Amino acid sequence: MKVIGLMSGTSLDGVDAALVEIKDEKVKLLHFITYPYPSKFKAKLKKNLNNDQAKLEEICSLNFELGDYFVKAIDEVLKGKYTYDDVDLVASHGQTIWHNPLGSNGQMPSTLQIGEAAVIVAKTNITTVSNFRVKDVALDGEGAPLVPKTDFLLYYDPKKNIVFQNIGGIGNLTYLPKDAKEDEIVAFDTGPGNVMIDYFMNKYYGKPYDEDGKKASKGIIIKPLYDYLMDDDFIKKAPPKSTGREQYNETFFNELIEKFELDQYNKDDVICTVTNITVDSIVYNYEKYLKEIDLVVVTGGGSHNKYIVSELKERLDKEVVTGTEYGIENDAKEALSFALLGYLSFHYKTGNLKSVTGAKENTILGNITYGRYRHG
Image (cartoon, rainbow, N blue to C red; front, side, top):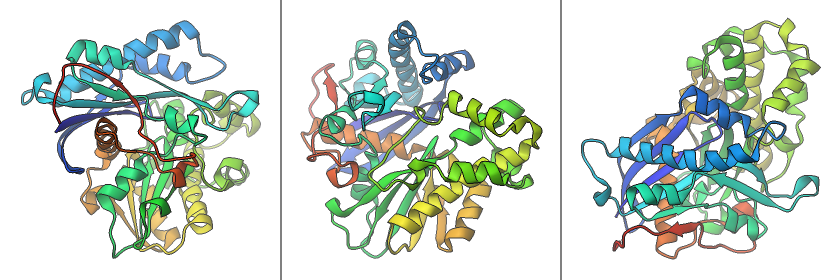
C-alpha cells in the first residue's frame, strides 16, 4: 500500500511529505521532500498562532489554503515518477493552531489542527486520514505525542535502551527500554526545540535557523535569562505533557525581550542562551524521568545543529548519534510516522498509546475523508 504522510510542524518551515510503501506495518521510504511556505503565507500562519493577533476569518481561510499547500507537497513528492492513481492513502497531520489538552484558562480541553482534508481529496481523489489528535484529547489524553506508537513498531531493539529525541520547533522524546512492552513506552515533550533559536535568528540576522549552531558556539550564556527559562513549569512538569506555539509564541518572546532588555546583549549570547535551554531541558528530563540509556538518536531539524548534538554528547555522557547516522532519514521521520498512523487507522487499528498520552484507552485515530475506493 502506497501512502503519503504529510506533516507541518511548529517550526513552520513548510510541508514535509513522505511517500512510503507499507506492508504488514513495515515501512519503506520511497521519496521525501519539504515544500517550503512562501514568506508571506508563513507570516500569516505565524500571526494566527498568536492568541493576541489571530482572526477567525483568516483561520477559516488558512484551513483551506493549507489544504492547497498540502496538495502542492503531494505533487512535488510524486513528481516525475508517480501519479495520484498510484497512491492508496494520504495521512495528513495538519498544522496545529492551538493545543490546550488540559483546558487551561477555564476552557474545555481541546486541540485544533487545520489543513482541510476535503481540499486534498477534492483535488487528488485520494482517501485522506486527518485530524489525528482530537480523539485522544476527547478521551482525556494530551493528544501528543503520537509518534511513539510508530517508533515502537519501527525501531524497537530488544538489545538496547534507546531514546529517540526529535528536535523540531518543540523537543520530544520516545524512550524504548530493551525489555519494554507497548504499554511501557515513555514519551513526552521536553520543552522548546528550535522555536526560540529560530525566532531570534530571524529577528537578529534575518535567517530561518542557526546553521550548524555557529552563532550559538560564538556566544556565552546570559545567566538571568537562562535561569528564568530553565525554571519554566513545563520543563519541570512530570509526563504526560505536551506543548507548542500556544506557549512559545511571539507574545512570549516579546515579553522576554522587554523583561531582560535583550537588545542590550550581544546577539550571539542570546542565541547561545536559548540553544542551551533546548539542550538542558532535554538533559533535565532524561535525568529526572528516564532510566538506563544506551543510545540517543537525534532527529528533526535540530539534528543538523552541530552545537546541540555536541553539547548533548558532552552533558549526557551517552552514545549520541543523528538519525542519519542511525539509518533514519532525519527530516522524514515524522511524516513517515504519520503515514504509518494513517495506515493503522485505515485498517481499524489503534494509533495512540494511553500510557504515553494519559488517554482513557487506546483508540483508532483520525477522520477519514473518502476519495476513490481502493483496496489496501
